[in-house]
Each structure stands twice: as C-alpha cells, then as structure tokens.
Image (tube, rainbow, N blue to C red; front, side, top):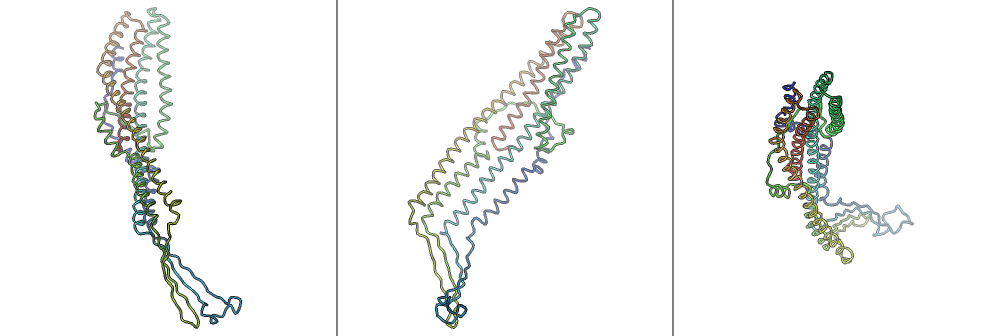
Length: 405
C-alpha cells in the first residue's frame, strides 16, 4: 500500500504547448468577428477614394420666356426667349482637398489600430481560456489520484476498525476527506463547462480532442523594456496617438475654411431665329462671418485635440499600471512555484512517506495521515495554480505590449 500511495503523488513534468499556435491560427482564419473586422477595413479603404473626390458636377436645364401667357409655344417672338443647358463644378481650395485626403488616411489608420486591438483581445481570450482549461483539467487529474488514495484509506481504516485497532472517528474522517474531494471535483467540473463554452465561442474547438500542457514558470525581468514596447506597439495607444494626428490635420483644415471654395459654371443658350450664345463664369464664398463660424470651428478642433491628448495620457497611465501589475503577478507566480517545487513538495512528500510508514505499524493515527495528505494536495494544486497564473499574466503582458500572436 505504501508504494501505491507514494506512486500516486508523482507530479507530471510540464512540456511545451505545441498545439496552441495551430489553435490560434485556426481561430484567426475562421472567427466571424475577425472576418467582420477585415471587411470593415476594406470598407474604410474604399471610403478613402470617394471622400477625397470632387463633388459631382451639376447639370441644369432651364427655359427663359417672357411670353409665357402669350403664345407659350412660339419661340421666335423675343430675343430673350432661350432654352439653356448648363453645367457647374464646385472646386474646393486645392490645399483643402489634399489635406482632406490625409485626414481620411489618418481615420483609416486609427480604425485599423482599434480593430487590431479587438483582434488581439480575441487572441488573448483564447490563450487565457486555454490556460484556465489546462488548470482545471490538471486539478481534476490530481483530485482523481487523491480519490483513489482516499478509497484505499477508507478500506484500510475499515479493516483496522474491524479488528479494533482504530476508532470509528478515524473511519468517519477518512470518509469526510473523500467527500471533500468529491465536492472539489463537482466545483471544478462546473467551472470547466464555463471555460468550454468560452472556448467554443472564441476558437470553435473540439474539446474532447484538445490535449496540451504548459511549461514551468521562468524568471521574468525587463519591466522598462516592456513599458517601452507598449508605448510603441499597443494598438489602443496607437489609435489615440493617430487621433491626435487626425486632430492636428483637422485644425489645419478648419483654418483653410478662411479660404474660399470656387464654383466654375458654363451654359449654352439656344434661340430661334436669333443667334445662340454661351455663358461662363466663376463664383466663390466670402468668409464674412468668420468670427461666428470659422473661428469657432478652429476652437472646436483645438479643444478636441486637447481632449485626445489627455485621453492618451490617461490610457498610458492605465495600461502602464496594468503592465506593472501583471509583471509582478508573473514574477510572484514564478517565485511561488519555485518555493513549492523545490522546497515544500520534497518536504511534504518526505513527511507523508514517514507518516504512512508509522501509520501502518500503528504509531500514527489517520488524522496525521489526512493532515499530511491535505498538505501535499495543497502543494500539488498550488503548483498547477502558479503555472496557470504565470502564463496568464505573461500573456496579458504580451497583449498590453501589443505583440501577442
């Protein structure tokens, strides 16, 4: 029995998660939300063309007739009787057109970064839920091991009770330990169903065939490097930064409203029996009400720019705080894992082995055995928890720095 109980306490080595990249790749190719993102980018790209085009020309047809109540169908009574066909084209002040094109390109870039942030969030959620899935599955394996140990203890204690070597309380506590394991199993299986539902949404996985494992936590360093990478790559920050560029261009565009737009027009007038004639010219607006219109628009765009600059600062502080939090979470998980694996696990196994030996010869009671079992069970579950915590924290860092793939 001793060898059997000890063999059930072996911790399986953690290997590289080779299956996850293929899972992410399939999700990236097939997830409907990511497909919608790609289509939206195409739509914005098309918008760039028509937003920077000239307005449609206007064609007009008119009749001039001063004899409308006297022989309305006669066209040879007066020289002023004409049939006119004209066309006009509005031409904005040329620098406006170029700057408007630049604004649309900036809107495209801003939208791209926002959509990239959504894409990275989906990828992050796939990783996170996969790690939680692994965490629960590994815990269930441990629980199953200890259920078998508990059944062995119950059988062994019943045998000893039948010959009067242990009390009924010891048998009862062995059964309580088994019941507690069953409660943990029920809770974990319920949590597993929630994780499976999330994974079906994010990655459409066949979970019955899902099999992967995680590496042991490693030492983490370079917080300042992570922060600098975040400044240069985080899509949320880049979207706001692009909004600031857009605001600068809109301020320039607003200032160009002090310059007039032009409308070029021409028409052909048909007369019978008189000679036909043509008319052409140009019209333009005068910024007469600049103090109530153009000045206010420049002020509006300037205030919007200031708002975006403050939003950037706020977002940067928030993301930096989250980055630091997860950096120290990963660091703590590594250090905790190291303590449990190198110090507590060997100690609890040695103590348990000693107590089992003494229990078999009647020098220890089942309460000591259960205490030792709970200690080593706690260590094994903590090793699983800290491994998952480390990987989730590190993947959060990758998301915040904008390099998650």
